Image (cartoon, rainbow, N blue to C red; front, side, top):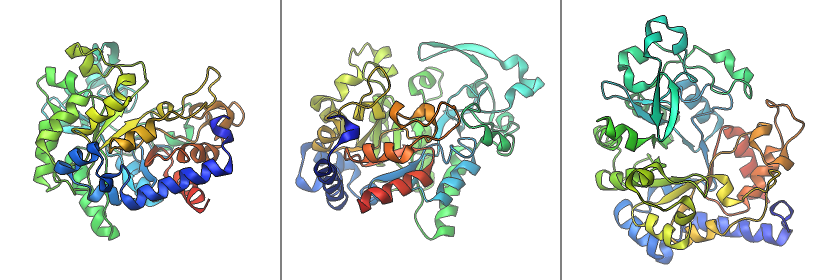
Length: 387
């Protein structure tokens, strides 16, 4: 039976397991599982385990409705009810400040190409083994970046977002930390953020190490402890290992396609792939320094050649057995980002059956999900928990 055709008994079992995880602390720390014990000794089972389950994480804010990694996007994610806001993907400037951009190349997310004074900065670099042409944050001072404005990254899928092109500047991580405190006071409720270190090996080679800069700012704002409302993530396990030694925050390793290798593994000659990391042994290794994983949704339920969901893997159960929570990525409402059977028509900017897809993924027992559309995700969670 395919994942989309689970019977009622299977759905009920998954839902009861998920609700149990919410009560016990998803990952089983109270059961004394080895991974959980190791992780919680340093980082505790406190704050992050108290988040609602499944946790709805606003992916780069509310990027389904506003240009990503802007205060407009972050603010809307909170207004829509996101439990956590992914603010932001952290990359450095030439003068060592951390700013929030999806990638260091900013040609697709800012209006830099319209600035003749920066035309000569356009260049081609090798970023994690891939030749990339454009403008890079590390070639600009913070003052120069502040003259730019954000634009929609995928206008073919989100033409309505282009309405907001040019409205917001690039935020710094320090501004995000102050915004978090301000919003917590205004709303009378703790605001959570989920920053990511981007391409840390690449930047360390440039003398712009990310982890120390992140740790310094977290310490400055008193947000470097195990119960701090800041979860840190990275696609490079060595970055999370480094952060584990610098701060007490909860940490998560992001995992891409099964056949890929984290770039720090490539640089270090480590032959392991993501497929090795999602084995029970690999998950135990991650649990020795992290509290969670952020796998691509395809690692939870793979797709066949036609793009339809197949049977769920054992990753959720295996990760929970190791004491890890799972926050997979990324749910989006538009057709091209949904499994084939959940699409409606062929328009690239049209919504498909996102609620149906959410339901199938929630039934696997995941602890949360990154979504570009927090409002859709919250309604889907309410439907699921009503069940």
